[in-house]
Length: 307
Image 1 (cartoon, rainbow, N blue to C red):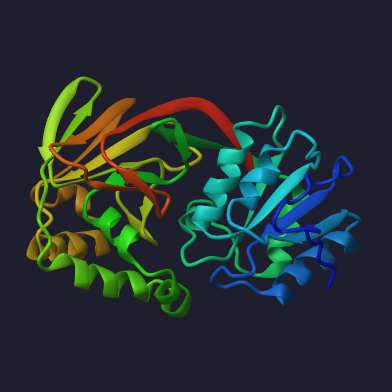
Image 2: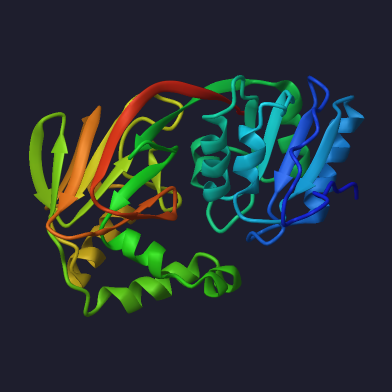
């Protein structure tokens, strides 16, 4: 398999300019679901069709963002083989690139909700064919305290779980690690009221998630629209005690969270989430400090390859 490494992990060199029209596949070899064989199948299929393709494995955290921000990156397509956090990293890097390439996704990682949003296939040959055909849609995203997110930004119980889940457990058990951590976190935690302002209107709750996507936490639908549609929605839950969380979870399973008692789903352009004290926050499944959060839509988009 052809793999391209940085020469020195302590002070990595900037990537060398690539041929215009080429494909760069970036992957984190420690991420869940990583498969060198799968990547090689994608690369081989692309080259069989005459597309120059390279595979580059990351060697330190943040490397995908560094590569995507480098103005010397000149490729037609940047393919992220990873989870939603890796995609967020690429999107963040693109903010500093004068002419970012189009984005493609190979669904690795513990979770890849964006893959559900885009209805991406799971077979190497089918993914390679998507990259080759070059059919794109515009990927919208929001900003949380100025940082881009493509799926969601939230404060409350789910963010506490994201902060608390051990990396070793996440790598070993995948999504089950979040379930175990949620059970451990749910009992004995102190609820903190949130104040959510949506385009000037104020509501209160114990949990709030600003969603740029239809899906949340997997195949569960929480709002209309999607990541390739403009606009965002805010889901606010009045309670997040263990029993209420079970009831909301059941409603989520059946796609009826918007009709659950004590749940509000509302479109917005600008929002703030505040609390009397700091409440854990997360974006796209990764820890993001704590409240307050200032969230807004943006007119900027990134072209993403779709079936």
